[in-house]
Image 1: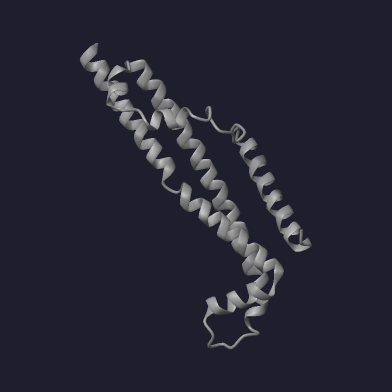
Image 2 (image 1 turned 30 degrees about the horizontal axis):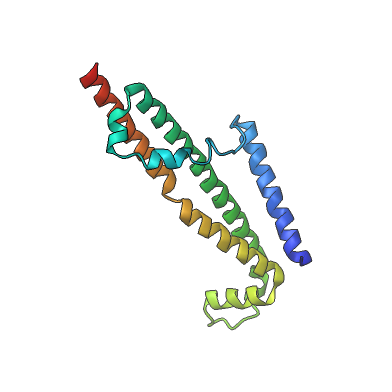
Length: 165
């Protein structure tokens, strides 16, 4: 593996370590999947017949589990965002001194693209940034959608408790 890429990887690992230390300081548990492999799939694929058979206690427990999954996904998103900010700031630090080497009428994006192409550290950071951005886009709305599903299950719980109680 290229020494530059290895250095960037080590620095990114250090960012992750610092994030882990911060979360430990504020007493968050270790970032780990909150359930078994197929548990979330089971909740997401419940049909009307399954929902009708649930009792209010089941609904409350499922709503809680969905909230846990939502919290987990939000933490994953936040981690990727922190990594992206680090990569972006580090990339800017590398390219800033080189921007003046290019024609002042050249567009900023074109200058950055040329610098990234010529500089292995900038190139490695650009790859990290792209990877983080792709992961953030995949995670972006998942946490809020799970939270919304949790609210729906809580509404079903309330309805079942009100009309069956």
